Image (cartoon, rainbow, N blue to C red; front, side, top):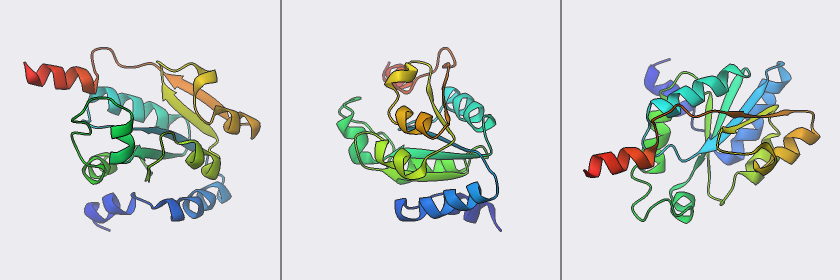
Length: 163
């Protein structure tokens, strides 16, 4: 299989993600889930995603759709990159096994559907405030935060580029 096919095969529709995850769980794989916009990929994102993947066997990334990024009010021009462009860039990372778009304001429905073994968010989140933590904990899973790599943020990068 070509690298290009591997990249596009990682982008899985919401309709098919449950089948994908269940097949992995059936073989005893631990599913890690995280989500975000990942608008302009930087070293902080890569550090975070590789650490998240190290926590289990399969990393599923819930990627905010363009519409959901706009509703987050990060900035009027965000996202800079379209959801398809962001997914292609993220798909090239070996640490990510599957990418699924979500259009809702939060990944709650996606987490409820997937029921990951491990739910991961950045260190700026308190465990009790992480969307879906109740679902994961009720199933005996873990909710983990990963500290950010100092000096890296998409907003900071955009500000720097404007100067």
